[in-house]
Image (cartoon, rainbow, N blue to C red; front, top):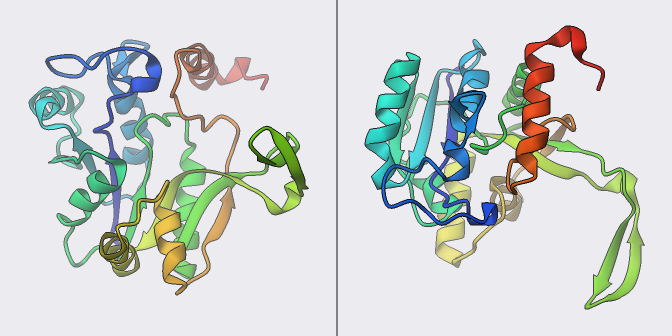
Length: 242
């Protein structure tokens, strides 16, 4: 089974409250240092560790590509990781990466660059589920009560047992994902994740594989404190009390 992983990493990380740099993106969130390594590298290591992953394609802004290429060389990842030019949106970046995949690819996994704490077990579970069903995503059940509102007024309380908070990886058969992106382009539809594009086709039901609370998306400055804690726990299992 040939599995390609796409990691869109062309975002500017504006929610971190920092301006985009003029040169290689050392202050964009995916390049921020976590224990002396960029967050992106921590994320890549998780996928490199899985024997199910054939290749990883990282979509970057053009001005970051040379810098990232040197980084991959230092990490010894160039044999499995390659870089493509990303787009102005996540959707464009994933589509650009999709266009570079070989026809022999069977499954495509898309993962956020700033989710470095995804577990290898989760990666392999969602890949295997997608191999059987055609489409699978990672999600967790919300622990908080969720309200549907209009402006600032509550309209209903949504049953938590019917809700999931989606994470990544999201994995699909190649032809299915390609068709989903084609349809979205035709309809000028911009989705919030890849599953939303696939759902519009109404060709398959998207399965959900249970994820973990640790698979956080590092988006805001406060997330870095939690990331440092998780990294400490990850590298010192005997201290893992969470």
